Image (cartoon, rainbow, N blue to C red; front, side, top):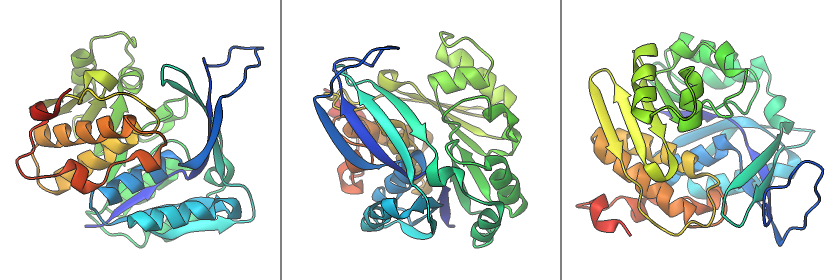
Length: 304
């Protein structure tokens, strides 16, 4: 089986601020960091760091070629990433003193992907392969429909969860990765609804898909048919929450591909994302497999 991540590659510009800027306000930044990002690139890096062979597809400008070098250094195959004469996607990230973030995205190459590129890329994969998608690039519907036609399994992280999501053929997804806000939106429920209730709603609404629901410090939930699971985070100091969900996604998929149980996979993914938030950066903060997987792993023995 092969894994294809078809998604965004971004140049992240991280501004360290006292608080998230208010409308009409001008504030200073204590520092500026330029780094690699984009949910697709982050998830590909997480899958590779977790020890799986993974292909990345997307589109960048020449200003983003360092992204490909970094991904390749983690073991990601970048042959399916197109380079065009335009700008790479950009993410302007405000990181406040409480380590919360606010993000403004510019599409760049992520908005320049063509249907022809989609077909050419997916034609290199076969029935049973896994495609991992998010909502930061154009033509996600086209990708889902063509991938399903080719017999690929579809893993969807509907982020950002905006008005485009409900225009997608969501019933084609075999796996959803959602945070509590995205889950409530998909379930047409209030954001403050009890998480287990939201999970049950999604399990009923998408009976053919695995639901993996993350909730920050409250851990993660799993639901599929009659199976339920719960994972807890490791209490580590928080440096930067950027990329935590992408780390979780990559490590959960990797753990399941290693034939780990649902609860063990949740534990591993929670551990990996806990380590990631204790470090600054997005892709760079994702831990390596030997930091996460080891014999006799017991999450309870590593809580702070």
